[in-house]
Length: 146
Image (cartoon, rainbow, N blue to C red; front, side, top):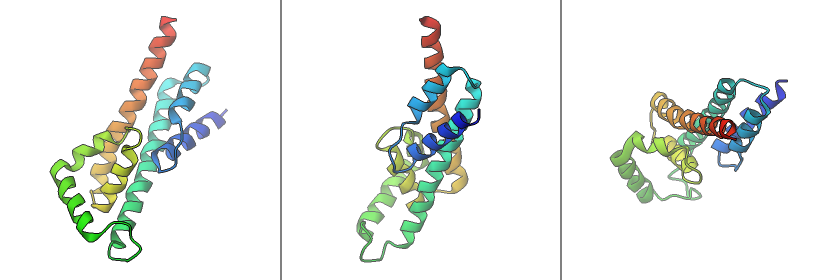
């Protein structure tokens, strides 16, 4: 019975990493299957997605220590420009961490630019859980409609 929850957690975790995965499809399938309470599905998906984003943040922190290496793909000048831009938009940009394609690099950049972990988790959590809540509410509304 717990297999569906692990599948959802894994899909959500991978979806937040730089590896493409479809946690939304798994969540919708489990909601429609009515095996688990919807609140539990949203909780599992949200935790998995936030933890996946934390891995990106950690990778960004490690990458930041390698910026002066020849093999590092970002020049010091580009990193400085990114820091200036991030300081302009700051942690607010993390609210877009749920957006496909751009969300994962934002979480990686937050690590490179040393966004405090507590604020990173708080803002990314709001964004990621918010997306799953909206999706679950939409699916439940559609099921009731039909």
